[in-house]
Length: 284
Image 1 (cartoon, rainbow, N blue to C red):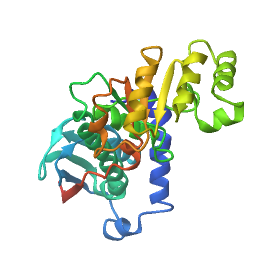
Image 2 (cartoon, one colour; image 1 turned 180 degrees about the vertical axis):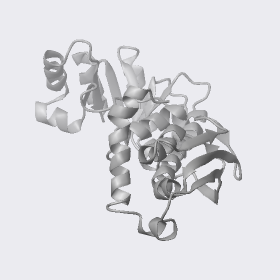
Image 3 (cartoon, rainbow, N blue to C red; image 1 turned 60 degrees about the horizontal axis):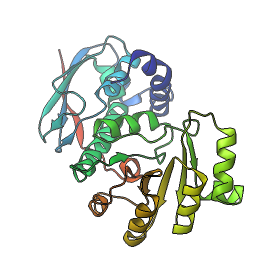
């Protein structure tokens, strides 16, 4: 759930932009068949089993068009929903319901799909101490929604953006001249409250990161044998994150590694939408 400040300052501008994308001057179809105000009601129906997420944003689309629109929800974010389930009734001017329908559903379907996929992946790590993390591989201008969906599905957020923390990736390391040089420069520049994370791809880079005093070491795209050697070498001297093409199909192989975090871009860039519809629009 977004607080009102976050909603107004950070979410509303993106929602309004999405509405402007869909309505550049007018909704010609709606204005053709509904030239005058008419109160109406429509049902929000789930067409696929999953985890619902984004109900507040769904409703916000309509209230930004007309503050008198009201949604009565029978579920809340994070609930398991079933195909055919009535999840809400939305009441307001029929013209508003028609104008906002697609944009509202786009948010709800996308966010629910991410929450569903995240819940499935998190379940595969059940019983381990590892935290499942997302990445910055989000849809432009949708990060605030997609990262919220990850949390709703039982995952955790990595840094929100480039200002949040230090993550020295391969190109940062190349620019600095090596792992040790990159860590040294980050320690000299970054605020002392920031942890310093380093992405490494080889055992030699692991050793350099440990020697340089990195707080978190990300083991990227390593085979299982190399991962095990790296974890044994680090031996608690830094927190460990594993990353690199982690999906629902292969995450279980990592469950026994004993690392702190597993990050997956697939949570946001590959989750399919959850099929949801607005049906049975009627005057009231």
